[in-house]
Image 1: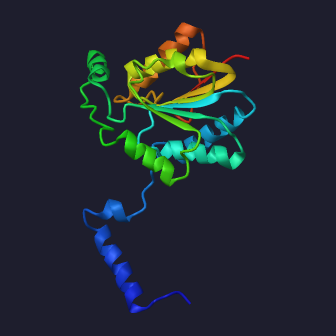
Image 2: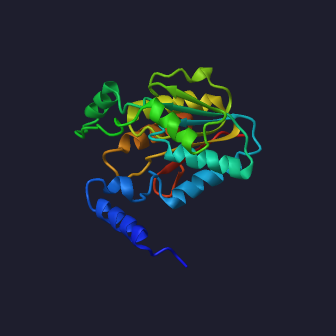
Image 3: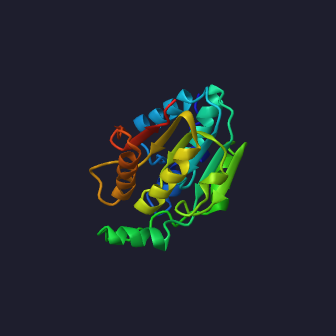
Length: 226
């Protein structure tokens, strides 16, 4: 029979009380992903689609690591063994990024994602057994030298604003092996705050002669021709 003793009931009541206080976010389970379940499934399926290719994995814009853990656990689950590169400022958007958005007429504060650190991200990967074969790089996506990366089979670009997204696309596309796939987040025509990523994606497609392919409302897809 389930334990319904007084100590058990008191423990439950204590947690219920704490959940109603400012400590609630620390007590209750919360959905940790910036992607909807269907979008996560699409990303996982795309990773699996590249399983037969030679090349590393790249994620630019990693936030706290929930998505990284999901992808790496999926890779382990389906038997994909590849080195995984993670690039992020781990301090939020740079003043240069925000200045470009101001020039695009945006007035948002863009103070998001300034609650992270490289150390916290690495601890998250380790706590979820997702730190093997992983290189974590603290860098600005807009100024990073992508030519130092190995050939890539898959890349997830999630840097939100125009300046870092434009640079990540320009730097990543030449590194993709034939058949490699890039997924670009925030290609949602209905958002105003994060439309810099979408603008960079559409501009890149036009420059490269590629047809925009946006799935599940916001995931822009680029496939390197065979």
